[in-house]
Image (tube, rainbow, N blue to C red; front, side):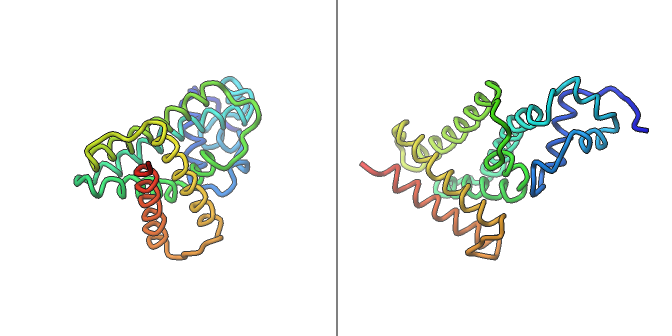
Length: 201
């Protein structure tokens, strides 16, 4: 029989995210499996989450924060301004490919209609971190700031392109089979598109 032991909301989310990290089907996970990983009765989880979708929404917000942090850490490795935009988009692609379950949770899976307000704020914060990163790189690269509205539109457009390409890649609908070749190809397109769009008059 599963023993009952103290658990926390954070432990439940951590366990769910670890189990989801590279899962092909986010909905195949359930509260019983998470409880087994924690070594507690699944009924304990209902003290913190009323349903699996509620847990997914909260895990989604934490997932966005963690991927943003990983992207920032990987992108920071580039020192010369001319390489920073390439390094940033390469970091985005690598983090998504190395955490495909998180990528699905973040951008592809239907989590339910009752989206918590806190989740919308977390996603907005993640988007703002991405915008700030590209804005800083562009300023270092060109010596002047990008128009804020144009930058936001550009980052959103390029990020949607990356999501589409990565979705095709991880679902087996690949134009380029080799993973590193794929990364380099989509990063080149992302850098080229960003530069063209931000330089448009």
